[in-house]
Amino acid sequence: MDTSLLTELCVYTWGTNSYWQLGQGHVEDLSVPRLADGALQMGTVRQLSGGGGYSAVVSEKGELLVCGQNHRGQLGLGHSLAVTTFQLCPLIGQRVAHVSCGWDFTLVLTDHGQVLTCGSNAYGQLGVSEPITHSVVLLPIQSVREPVIRVAAGLRHSLTVTATGSVYQWGMGLSGQAKRALSPQPVPEHFTSKVPCLVPGLEQVILHSVAAGSAHCVSLTAEGDVFLWGSNKHGQLTSSSTDSFLPRPVLLDRSPLGGEKVTHVHSGWTHLVAQTESGRVFTWGRGNYGQLGRTELTNQSADQQSSSALRGAASHWTCVPAEVKILCGASQVRRVTGETGHWQDGLRATWVTGDTDHGRHGLQARRVTGDTGHGCDGTRARRVAGETGRGRDGSRARRVTGDTGHG
Image 1 (cartoon, rainbow, N blue to C red):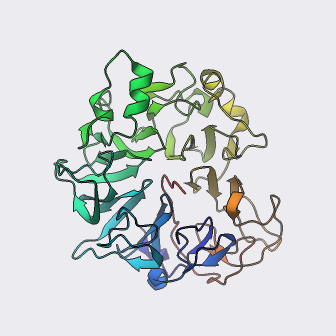
Image 2 (cartoon, rainbow, N blue to C red):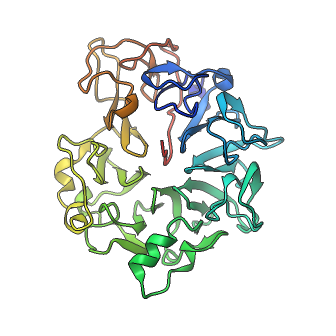
């Protein structure tokens, strides 16, 4: 990591705020970005993740800051009270490398490759051997015997990838769909296990990244191949299958991507976004809220999934610079670029697509012109449309990337 570009970075929040998940100290929805309150501004931000009514931030120092709904202990603070502003999660002697929020549980990865979990365990999504319903403190997962390099939380299931490239899955969140789709065949163990279980079908490849949707799983190899499994209801997994559920990983066909290697893959609840080696961005899956970033709204129903998920994707690809980073939420995707989308003064912009309910975009209109505040474009602190707070224009910062983000 190039730390020479790191200075203090402001974080702005907006959208739905019923459970204090914006860290503003109140529960009013925000239609425009506002500077987050609490301990969040104490240093540079490395990574963000959002769950079902709560938020988590990792600082460059490896600190974990959390706020929002906490009824299942998903904030890891040792209690189950809601938190109105970002608070520091106590991790004595440990630095956090990555965090991923599920619906009401959290996966935390330390810089030593250990996975810690907290929150609801109703579906075994915490991955611990103890028969507990939930945990208000972070618990270590003991059954993975090697260092972990990435974690991903789905709605009620979990994924990790290890330093040797193996992928583990646990949590029964997908077992009901799997049982209905696969009957009378048995449900594979990785959909029913409450402790980390090696995902079959990936033995011949080395994985280095994972992502999770509400009911699907994604993994990316070092060679730029994408494997997908789980729910295919909205065509989010493959265009070559008519099955609504894929029990084993299926290789994504690169043809609609121009045959290019995939460098980053991100997941919303029911759609996916991939960036290729040339910087192109491809989206597929559910699109009825505009989360695919295309001019037309599409919704991949179950009977349409096999023919329309990726077919024709090449005609809808968006060419962006190689440094693009993408943030996904339950029904929206943000493209953060350093080259496309300039305001009149030449400053770069943050583009957002998807449902505008509850002001999730931070925009007051679908077409945005001009600039009214300060934010970041992913490479330097810049101005973002529709903002009311003040940031630090011109300060340099590392790109801030998000996760599965179920919010």
